[in-house]
Amino acid sequence: MLAKYDHVLVEFYAPWCGHCKTLAPEYSQAAAILKKSDPAIPLVKVDATVEKDLGTKYGVQGFPTLKLFVKGQDSEYKGGRVKQEIVDWVVKKTGPSSKNLANAEALKDAKTENRVMVVYFGTADDSRLATFMSVSQTVEGVTFAHTHDEALVAEHGHKVMLFKQFDEGQNELEGAVTSESLTKFVEDNRYELVMIFEGEEPIQRIFQQENSALILFSDKTGEHEVEFRALAAANKGRIVYSVSRTNDGLGQRLAEYVGVKSEEAPCVRLVQPAGGDLSKFVYSGDLTQVALEAFLTKFENGGLDRSFKSSEVPATNDEPVKVVVGKNFADLVTNSNKDVLLEFYAPWCGHCKTLAPKYAEAATKLLHLSDKLTLAMIDATENEIEGVSVQGFPTLKFFKAGNPTPIEYDGERETEGIVAWLKKNVSFEWTDAAATETDL
Image 1 (tube, rainbow, N blue to C red):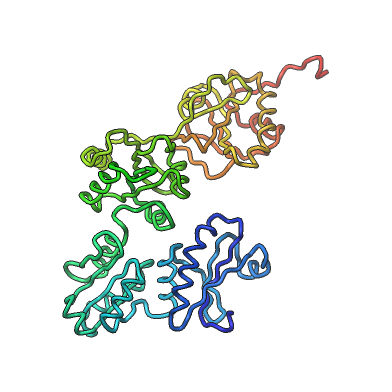
Image 2: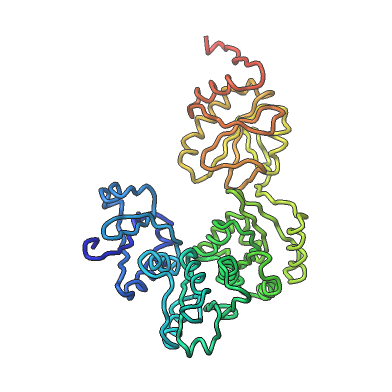
């Protein structure tokens, strides 16, 4: 394959990989499009769990990994994960970044084939064309095309237009064509006004680009969605708008991440990603355009209180390892006047299950210090603590009495290792348990 074609895009995948499964239909559709290009550019897949030597040879460390091979030489793929982004990235790396449209029929076909396309109408010697070509090389995920056909230029005028298969269908760039104005024009108009939360595009726009978003969680279309779309139409550009289905795939995962229960739908949440952290704000009023506009204005003015997920406080909490939730965190940890070792865990985590009996044994051994020291655990999938970031499970953090800033536990994850680490790090004078007749 690599010897036959000058350009080949290769995906190294694993059958069990969720991200690979999400990519699969987008990759397949991109392959169908690029197969028709001249010359054809093949997209292939390699099961790296079977072809382990190939994975090692090309430095595959995670899945999916995509690499572009040019005359047998591999390079890192840096495009997006949706069909058009894949196509555009490959086309720009293997040929002209803007396609020449010879006539009206070519324009019609291109508009049908591309969900979003930016087109320059004008003469070849126009200085604006150079700017257009320059921007076309840097913007990913959008098809660029140009035409010098006299009939098309006469019909559309000397201008830049964006054609799209949704919302108002097309937009025209007003004013001068500069790199800044053209880039902003594309970014302002390339997405649906209200994005359905499915596929990679909303993930990229909201979470990867870190854009604040107002999200309507709903299991079905209704009057609330009509109001929400009216809000978006009247307030374009203020924030990203999205609709997420709580009972379907990616939307269900988003609901879990944000802390929305299916029985709460329809409901609205505002999310603000920043630096790996996600601020969430709960809307509790009527789902009307006027009320939602007031909520958005309050957010813009800094008048909203951030929301944190929390389970309910347990009815009893008398085991050696105490159960912490968001609602009792201050009482049991920062305001307890005790040193606290807190394990952040996930119910599905195998390493957490392995640690559990050892952690409980350490807590039992240290019950004689219970007036000064607490060993506790918190389900980090259901509870969030302001100012505390957890990147993996299990994570253990140690809070010294009177100090809200924890230190990372870096000791052994065995019973005696936990006890030994605490003995070195507690803020009080350590005493061992009194010996009993059984110990003697």
